[in-house]
Length: 133
Image 1 (spheres, one colour):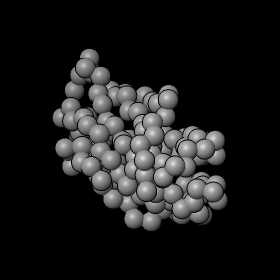
Image 2: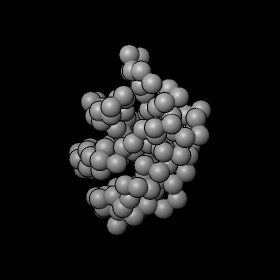
Image 3: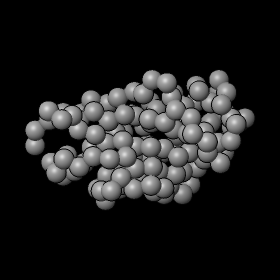
């Protein structure tokens, strides 16, 4: 199971008209907060960061929000069952949040001490107020 654990410094991906936190608050299972998990979380953030996208139509319509995606990472890094846990309020953003995980998989294999690992990943889409359509 997953317990809320927030990274201390969120990473950001700069998009032409948007700033999107990467793996902002990836949460870990049970009481597994260990240096191994922290190192693994950084690897997950890097993998997810490389695949981030802000849907053009959602950007044009100035849609923003946070969707939460639930998925399980197996010992070999493969992903089984990706689902939307919490909607952002916008179908395009929800689809992109789920697609982000599918597009990034397989992930680096987690350390044996923490595999398999269930993740609830908040994926935040936000536009700067000064951005124009």
